[in-house]
Image (cartoon, rainbow, N blue to C red):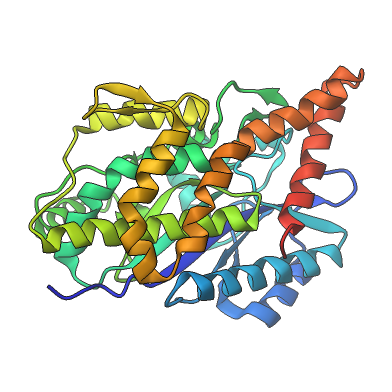
Length: 375
């Protein structure tokens, strides 16, 4: 069995805010022009004018991916600062109102707005997508079916959207509920083969319901453009190093599942009904309440989940030379998710007598600082 190359590509969506007030701000044409001059096709506008998207070149390993992503983040931040703006990498802005935002005047986004109606207007959300190179189509489907088990773990770790329009939602990832209003989202269904997947996509494209598989927005999907599996469940990561750790975990876990297949073994299949329960726990609690281990018939604290996960992928992290990156999983669990950190930041000014609006602005200032960290 030919070993896939397990190359990496990382896409991130950022929100642009006024560097002084933290208010959302549309990207000036001059900013996009400056970024394009330095980064070319690695940067592009997103659905809303206050968003900007980046995508790394294909990287052979996590070290190279780190260099690419650091360069992209630093370049966007540098050009934004010249316009009095700052990027933040969180899945929801702490206090902005989606009703005040305009979408980018581009054919693709105009069509999306027409197709989705009011659902699209609420898409004031950002995420992180990780592509891993799996050249063979059959392997892509087989690994997608097995990797779905780990998607809730990634959501719990990345959760960065506790606030919506200035209110605490009670969730660690409110983004998932907003995005869930769109069709063709959530956990991917299990397919018996690539042909079965291809027939399912063709059933919708023949009818003109979708133009191609890029309009399928599952948490994990075969990429429409590249020979990759694209993990889409993660919230945007405020901290650069956290994004790298998640990418390394995804890459090593896919290699672990491929390695099992070489020994005619595979990860146990669980019905999406059960996996969706862990997805909900991740969206609601982040890493604070653990995940259900269906084999052990128990809810396992996340620090134990992390240790078991690291043991599973140790051989693969060694083979991919990504041990330092995946080992940071322990630090992420000990520190807690961004959702927890944002709540702690908001609590401090409230305890000192500040009003809710001031507390939300304090959260935004912290997100600006976290974006700059490690660049």
